[in-house]
Image (cartoon, rainbow, N blue to C red; front, side, top):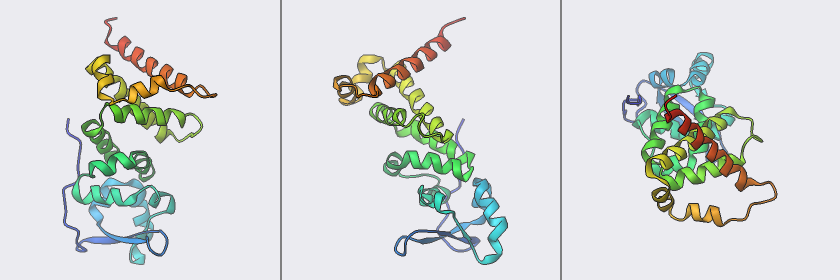
Amino acid sequence: MSTYKPSPLEFTSIGTIPVRVPGNSSSSRVYHVHISLLYGQSKLVKRIIWEGVGTGGIQIPDYVAGLGFEHFVTWLHNGDILEGHFKRHIINLWELAFELESNSFKAYLKEKGKECLGESDYLAFAQRLETMQPADSSFSLQDLHDYMFQGLADKIHTDGWTSFIEKTEGGWEDLMNRKDDEDGTKGKFLSSLMAWLDKDDRKSTPG
């Protein structure tokens, strides 16, 4: 099943509303975004429009702007985000989809991840997100944590261990050669990974 993507549109002021994204004097920006796209793709922005459309535009809250709202605007107009931007900002983008209350943007991020994340990416992100749990109680991060571990487990099942290790381009060897820290970070990560692999094995085993 294909994931919904907004129809690409030209960056024009016709049929749009000014969307002010706060920042310092040099980084504050105004985007002219088509109202129909905003209405359909973000419950948060839809509420803001209802409350402030009579003021000549709307302003995005600081906590949303700081997560990379410009990437959401790019997706609205182009239907896609550059792979490099996606990989560099995936954690913030996941949080952005949650804060914007945009199920379609979140669905797009999940499909984009399947298209462009490789074995080394899943391994790196899973390790990073494991260290962020459970200290950060944001369930959007927990959701991304689970997405990365599921992707990692899928790669191992599909590739087989030997091919998977080769495709991590040294990442797995670095992990295995690394001494564990006082918090047992490496051990916790490996335990979590084994749990995901065991869960998938149980799913595939006839009951």
